[in-house]
Image 1: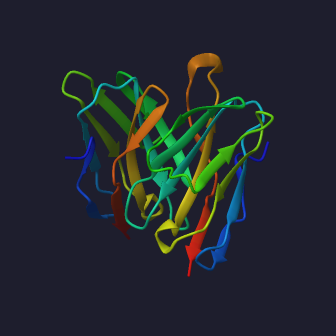
Image 2: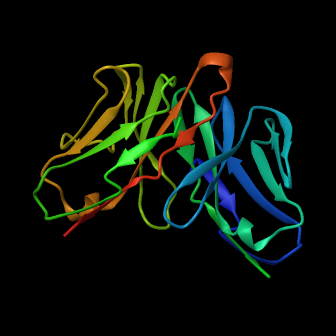
Length: 107
Length: 115
């Protein structure tokens, strides 16, 4: 079993839909990152969380430390949100990544 | 600041050759990370530097791999006697422990193809 599990692996939505991507982890962590990766490889950091909830524009990230679970929500999704979304957990200096969720938002 | 810069962006080499990748982190960042990513997978940790000190190495980093950060600024990742299994995207990221943000900034990656 991977230390970081994401679901779903693939997600297709219509423009405007509310999107949720989930991340569960099995190790003790000091922080959790949500990352966005576009075709071609560039990775952008969206959030770093150690507790509670953060919001940036249409993106919301939550974490429940007791349940070892985090969610990334996208409101009013848009085709430009199409990308791979990766959850990564930090333990000490080490980051362990999930395998990513491929999101496709159709117009 | 132009962010984290990696070069070359693409490298095609024959099996058995040596390759070297360079990463220039954001100038005030003291932490630098190397990751490897194969198609359809999340990145895997390779190694971590704080300033010029290599503090952690993954078991993925065989003795054919070596990384340096001699002056605590740019870093190089060298792969000797490349094998086809080394084909991957090699990603560099940097962060600062000042202000305790820990946010990571990634380069665009260096894609290696070993023929």
